[in-house]
Length: 336
Image 1 (tube, rainbow, N blue to C red):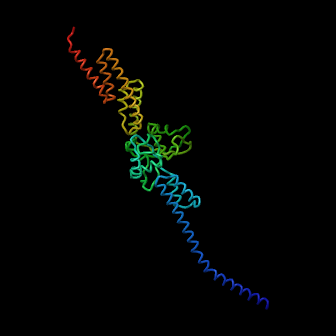
Image 2 (image 1 turned 30 degrees about the vertical axis):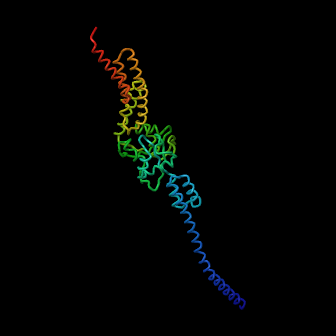
């Protein structure tokens, strides 16, 4: 009994001793908590600074540097919400195609409401100067802080290609074997050039490759613009055929009917230029040959056809005036 009592008293004593030691260690533990909190706060601050640094590079158009910094942050903090959001902004740009009449100033004004941002577009797309754009060149449009929410290629080009109409609906097309953007563009819009628009609208990295089974968003527009496009295609086809037949004036007349907003405008412009250069040489040569053959009226006719293609050719004007004067003089001669 005495032994049991001794053991009990000893146990109680040890318990009190351990409790006292624990109580003395508590203030020390409390003193360590602010230190840990400070370290966490410092770590978060460093993360935010890195993110801001990445955003700063991004806003300057230096996408590679921005991606490198944000990637480093995400490797250490994969679930950091701000880093995840900024990474999406940096790596998911809008795609844009250059059409006839486009400038970097206009594109920047549309997407950022600031034409001065053309320099960012130039930096991102390695364009040496504002006037170095090429037709159907594809541009990356980064989602800068000044990006106007909701703006895309559909809104930018609909007045030019779709008569300003909004689509009746957005069709979800399941890509089939053999489908190409050009085929789909001809099927739904009557011309293949808008294959570029379909690629941009669907944010496709590659404009020439479709994967069967994927879905494409295809805006369906009222038929009025499609009818206009079909009419423009007729002009284009007739003009092309006349050019092959060396009927340069007819080719020029047909191709000149194609308006600037038409998807055939750029190609028509190239053919019109060919009409002018080849046609002028052709008609001037025929005129010279007719004149040498003693047919001044035929000569004047051909030179006049050449003048239609090149109205500023003063030498042709002078030739025509001289021939007319000659014909008038010949007509005034009495019959022998």
